[in-house]
Amino acid sequence: MPDQASIRKARATDAETLAGFNRAMARETESKELERDASLRGVRALLEHPEHGRYLVAEVGGDAAGSLMLTTEWSDWRNGFFWWIQSVYVQPERRRQGVYRALHEEVRRQARREGDVCGIRLYVERENGGARQVYESLGMESTGYRLYEEPL
Image (cartoon, rainbow, N blue to C red; front, side, top):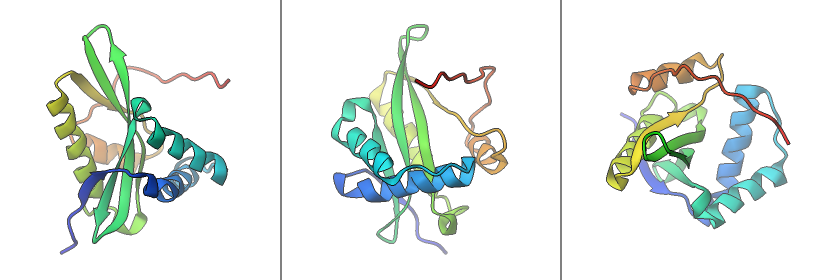
């Protein structure tokens, strides 16, 4: 039986690992090669400015097995925050072993404890059927929204 994942808040010493996870995820899901130094600076910037968000790290046997990033969005309609799950990555050899489930359950636990969180959201590539299946198995539902972007 595989070890269970334990979840913790990311530390500054996790920056290289998190940036590596982000590069691996971009390569795997979007066939994009992220520039190493830029991705590392981006991770470090978030770790140094917790008001922008935070990372959670899943460890199995003392090693980082996966992670996600949380950011917030204020909803004036609901008078609360949506927590956005982003930059989800689980090491390939640790998939289908409950690593993401443990991360997701910790997000739920923290959101309920905060008291001003009205929902949890994330976006996923249309063709990433495996990820969509995992999110749906955890009770998440597809919304009627489409995501638009204007790169600057």
